[in-house]
Length: 430
Ligand code: UD1
Image 1 (cartoon, rainbow, N blue to C red):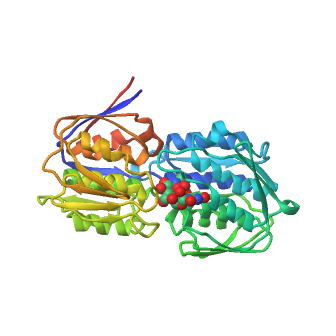
Image 2 (spheres, rainbow, N blue to C red):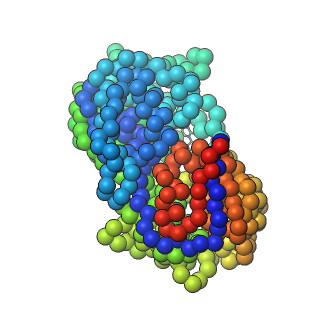
Image 3 (cartoon, rainbow, N blue to C red):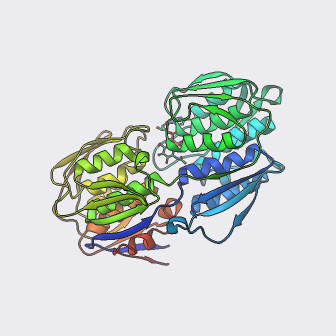
């Protein structure tokens, strides 16, 4: 199994190209199920999760082709991919596929909307909490779906084979639920109003793509989204937004090591709250024509308290990285996780590097230390694993991070991007 070896202590200086957003690309790819025409997505990141979703969509009959070799904009490596679901050959998403990636459950929305039926396996357990799908099923029921659960599968059928628009209020803000609601309502008969909808930039990106395909959606980015259902959708060409979590992750890495890095293609407005917090902690963040510039020179990092919240609050997907940064801050920081109940698995691993963290319910109390010392550590999930990389970049000596496949799910060419800025990072195979 691959490991990442890091020798800490170097500043980061230079440029890091930001890839297309994984969490935008996945629902956009799933939206290709809504039309028999070709959906062309530019700036799709080259990640294990994207490859896995290509396989899952292929099972339903989606053909794909990759344009050109690499896109040169921002010197990224993301690709343009055409997805065509001319015929849906199977409305079942089996356990073997759905269990590998939770977001693939979202195919239930477009399958039900286009075909009037879908049979999708429940995703099963997940390392960062129970993550149920009740809110996703409720929005489909509001749109007239009949839902049964049999042998671990959700069997959904639309009355008279077509969903019907309705007013639906989510009991809790859910990104996945909002994606599913948007896709399903786009082809429903009549008007749908989604209340208490998620406001994440990835929702706005999906709505923009659906509108380019002929949908009639307004209000995406606010908590009330209105969708006027249409009879069919066409193909379109759409560019995936830059990855705000990758942008925030590298910003924290620079804050941790010191240095001066331009995150090319990164967008400041996608991360306002996180950048406010980083600024408070002592990083210098500014917008440049190429993207976002992050600097920390001279002064150390100050402890700042953080609570994760739905957008526009501080993202849960940056909580582990921020904790990595706070391990060497001056003072005590309280980090409260409100989105997922079991998202502190990195705490034990950070402690192996010398971090002082105690847990009190959903709050981690981090007492900054003067120095971390490299050690072998284990990645436990996608975002947790990159927090170990951040800590390793500042730790004295050598850190090896095991179970690197977690990183490969969400970070494109991580070693290359960090090495390009002066870090000592390498992948060790086997
Ligand atoms: C998405 C992101 C993930 C991010 C999360 C929160 C993708 C591929 N994944 O996940 O990286 O961490 O948003 O920003 O975009 N919940 C229920 N019932 C449901 C659905 C969700 O109780 O039916 C709960 C979840 O357990 C969690 C909360 O609602 O506590 C928010 O989850 P949600 O926003 O749905 O996360 P995902 O869409 O799965």
